[in-house]
Length: 443
Image (cartoon, rainbow, N blue to C red; front, side, top):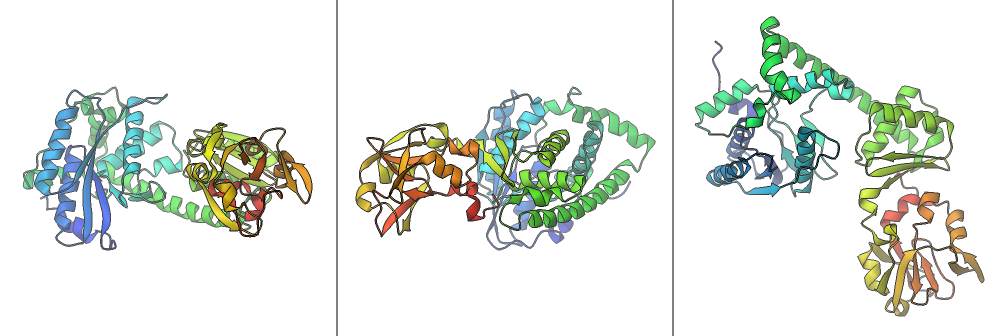
């Protein structure tokens, strides 16, 4: 049998050159893999300067869940590592238990205040992920399994520093350092496909093909290299399509179908949306290639094509703003503008301070709303149309009125001539700028 070596030297030599003070949060379930990872990171504090913490997600799916949380608290206390324990409700929403639990975990990771979330996936997990993707008909991105690095959100990255180690390596390390860990009883349940692969299928295949893991991991590395090249090409294509500051549909149509599909995937990814299935992307690609105006409903978002531009409407974000929900807000204008995400930008034809200190209303535009421009009353809906505001968004566009519903201003666009002052303010909600083509926003 091959003699097992301490993996810490290899872990330390591959440790990234992080900027001093970077915040790393390790996901800690209490199992073998995460216990070893946190121990390795705790040791690294003697060699590098970084803030280390841990997070335990309490799923509440096992009768032992409270004991696991207590174990993690005790373990972190011994290592001197701050721990946050987050209880979640695993909402299936059409997903299996595993997928729903994973979604809940990643929501917790995303809510953290760290720069990097460290996960304890290892070589055996990589093999299993590849096989699961193959059995479920995954494409190249699924077959490329888990990258060492990926973005979690705009501020945080996922890091998997143990992908070069096997489960046997981690077991040896835990034994050598006297590390205790918990066993999740659900890992032995063959009803879950991953467990069946891990405990039954893969051991049998390894007996038949001793080099199975080596071959699969070589495939994964090759696929990841190919995928990186495709992503580079997609990034260049995306830059070309958005050269004028927005996603230009006419430029998109000049590419081959394969690159058009990749660009739509890139557009969703750019907005941190939930990636749709390949068939859904293909269906929208066919519609967008032929139609000038169309809509694509995604999970929590919509994409609109209008006047040669692709627009993103994030329902999960925008519904937090009252006027998107068609809710009228009443109160001191300066206060309620701040509450709804507006800032008051100096403008040569803006609202005076005296008016902003009065009571008023913020609400969605109505059919009879008028605004005085150049000495004439103009329907607000006409102003929105002339500004090329997306039709779906026009009916949700906010206006600012007096208590008697006299229109004072249209958000981000105009102030009524009746109330303008030379050193006034225009109420601007940055969230709305993405729908103003003349401002040249890619979003």
